[in-house]
Length: 240
Image 1 (cartoon, rainbow, N blue to C red):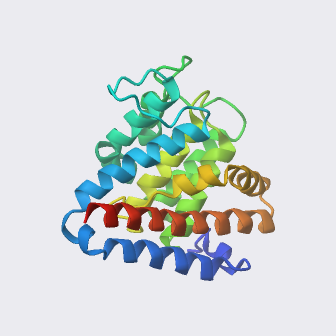
Image 2: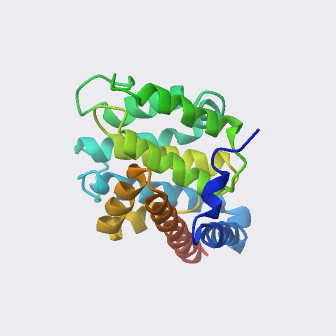
Image 3: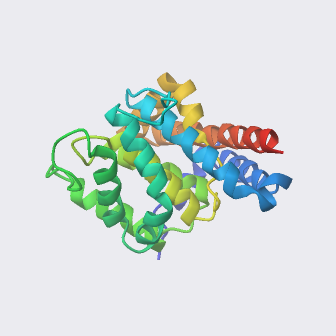
């Protein structure tokens, strides 16, 4: 059976970018601190990712010293980050249920209907296709699969609120489940925040479906994975 994502590996620059991203994330897992103390560095990565993801959706990055987060976007992003380990098994067998759960957590303080995709033409069908890819419908390398998960969810914006936080959380789940970043050490969200204009433009290019646009998004995401690995290395170095 033909792999639906395999042709993307033939787009200019994609194969090399995917390999570089995969190697960068792998090397972080070999950092001496992460060989045994990865739970501590993963926890820090999770918080940094949640803060950056919230900021990309217009929330603040600062967590009050007393821990009382009142901003609804940041609060939702932190709830999602805390729940990823629990949601992961659902993602692996029923990703649409996992997305619904992520939206309930992310959008709880934003109002509107929670956990149900919009009834817009094509949304349900494309979500079903995405779920099929996540549950074994493709064998492409992890960075490429994660790029497609992230880009497709952002293009679809299946929920009424918090689509960005949900999409970036789903990309972390896909990174874990695909074996790309099994300990969730990377923080590509920070790169996306630092390069937000490029991030938004690359996502728009992906949404067009044009091969060149898809390639631009994949290359951007692979660069984000490499930058996220550098962020992870910094976390590990500071912990040692």
